Amino acid sequence: MPLIQVSLREGRSPEDLRRLGARLTEAAAETLGVPPESVRVLISEVPGDLWFVGGRPIGAPRPDGG
Image (cartoon, rainbow, N blue to C red; front, side, top):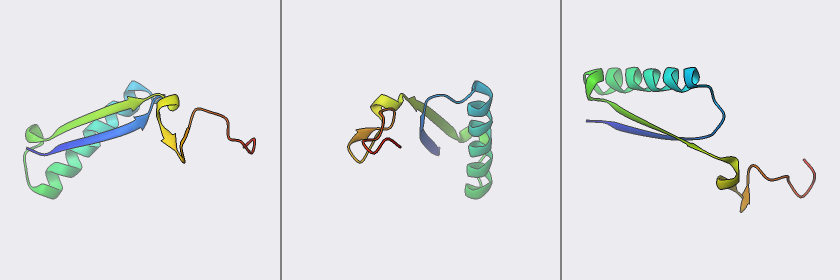
């Protein structure tokens, strides 16, 4: 049973998340030759203040003002 885990910064619409889940399921089923019912997709949304790049949360202003 394939399990696909995706982490995204929060803020996408429920429709976009449903579409992503469906398309990931289709791609995995086709690529791996398994029934779509056996594919699991877990989408986690993370607030920008808990997602770090270069040691800084992506929700924080950059030191260079950009």
